[in-house]
Image 1 (tube, one colour):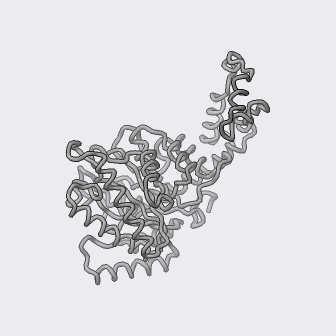
Image 2 (spheres, one colour):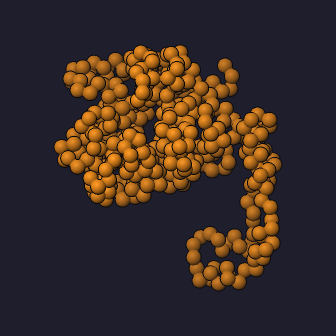
Image 3 (spheres, rainbow, N blue to C red):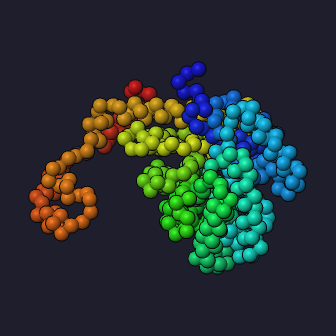
Length: 392
C-alpha cells in the first residue's frame, strides 16, 4: 500500500446515490444494475472509505410500509456494524416525486409545504437512528421557470419558516444534529433560490437558530455559476459555517456533471485541498471529505470502485503536493507578510480618531509602491511545478 491509499482516518465519505448511480441520464437508460445498499457499504469499506451518506429514499423506497422500513434499516445497520462504516450525514429527497414539481418548502400549495416538512421530519429521525450528526438541505426544486408565479421574497420567507421549524423539531427531540444548506444556481429548475454559498450565508444570519445551521458547498454547483469555489469555501470557513462539503469536478458552463474529484480544473482542486488542509497556515477543516460524484456512464461495477478510489487518491495526492508547496522556501519568501511598524498598528483593531489622523499623515509614496513587482508569476509557476511533480 502506498502513501496515497485511503484509510478511515482520512474521513472520506460517499453517498449511496453516488456509488449506487446506475448510469442513467436524461437521454439514456441505466448502464449498470441497481446495487443493494448493504453491498455498497461493504465495497466502500474495502476501498478505504470511512462513511456513507444517504437520502431517505436511497435506503427506504418512497411509500414503503413501516414493517418494510424497519427491515431495510435493520439490514443496513448490520452492514454498517460488519464493515465498521459510519453514517455522518443524512438528507431527504424533496425533488424526485411529482408532488415537488413547484418546490417543496417554497411551493405555492400549502399541502406540498406540509408534506415536505413531514417527510423531512421522518428523514431526520432516520438519520439520527443511523448515527448522523449532520443533515443537509439541497433545494433542487426550490425555484422557478415562470418567475411571475410567486414573489421571490415569499419563497425566502417560506424557506426560513421551514428551517426555523425543523431546528425546533431537532431541539424538541433532543437530537445531536446540525443542518448544512447546499446552494446551486440552476438545474433542475431554471433559477433556484439562494443560488450560491454567499446567498446561503446571509440567509442563515436571518434564522432563529443560526448557530445550528451552516453550509455544504459543492464544487460543481459553485463552478456552474463561474465562481471560485475556493473563495466560497474560504468565506464559509472564515464565518465558522463550513459544516460539510461536497467534492467533485465540473467544467464551467456545463450542466451539473458530478465528475470524479480532481478530474477537471486540477489547479482549483489543488487550491481547495490546500485550503481545507490548512497547509498555507490557516485553520484546517476537520469535518468529513464527502464525494458527491458519479462514475462515468461507460463503467461497469468495477469501474464504480475505480472511480471511488480515484476520488480519494487524488485528494491525498493533492494534499501531499500542497504540503510540499507550502514548505518550499522560495514560496514562503514570496508570500511572506510585509511588515511595517508604522502602518501595521493603524490597520487592525478597529477605528479611532487618532488612527484616522495618523493614516492621513502617513508618508506613502504610491509611485514607489506601484512599481514594485510582486512575483506572482513566479509563485504560480512554482505551484504548477509542484502540482505536476517537477518539485518535491
